[in-house]
Length: 120
Image (cartoon, rainbow, N blue to C red; front, top):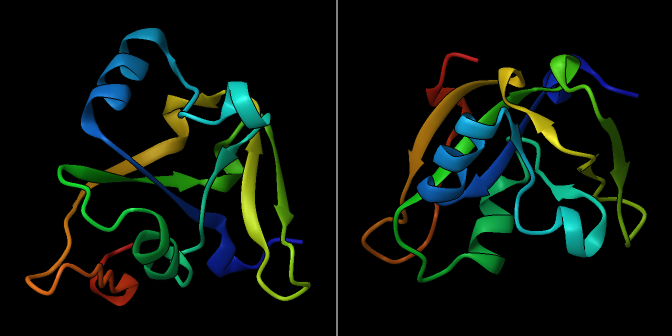
């Protein structure tokens, strides 16, 4: 199911929930309790997600997650039969997060993450 590119998944959050997760040892996000999973994206999907759901947000970070180290089940699911997004069905063990990046919009207010600029 996973190809090499999909071994890295990304999650958008704010610094405070991540800081709390590091103290607790697991990250639950803002949807695990309400929807049953943590929303994630592949590097190729992150701009679409950010520009759809996070316009106007400040002080965002990207959790860079090694999918192979995630202890909970990851399912790739989608509504349209083409865009399958990774969902983590359980708490995210923080040792699966290998990098945390500042994630800010550009001057035009849009997000433009270029995965090619990062060494992962």
